[in-house]
Image 1: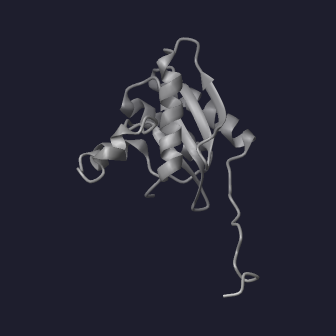
Image 2: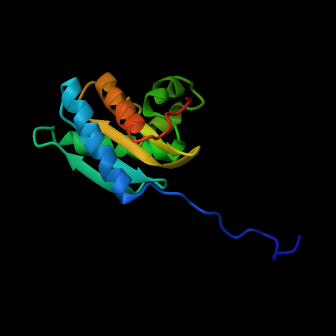
Image 3: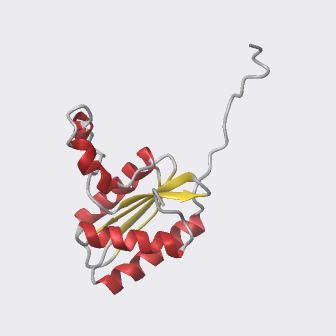
Length: 148
């Protein structure tokens, strides 16, 4: 094989700053309607923080949890609530020891045109409330939900 024909890179899609900020606003709106305050983290496709906001009365630990949920979702292109079942498998369970892996609902990959462009992490409500706010915000901005 000639090295001239060997692709040396591939294009990477990332959520835009404007969309990340809009997503955070949509999450806060959904959370207010649902009845909780939150920390919201948006990462790029590589799990690096793109945008973040924590409501005044959201506990300080929600900041770290939200970021780890977003990182986990971006890293595996999978919603974080799926990890509870995954970690029950003894062949996957060792991943639970990774310091950033967050197997709690509220983290979603941000999917645009079938490609993961980032991660969204929400912390502050119950895991069901975090998931609901994430799904509402992603849908409101036209992003695809995993498995849909």
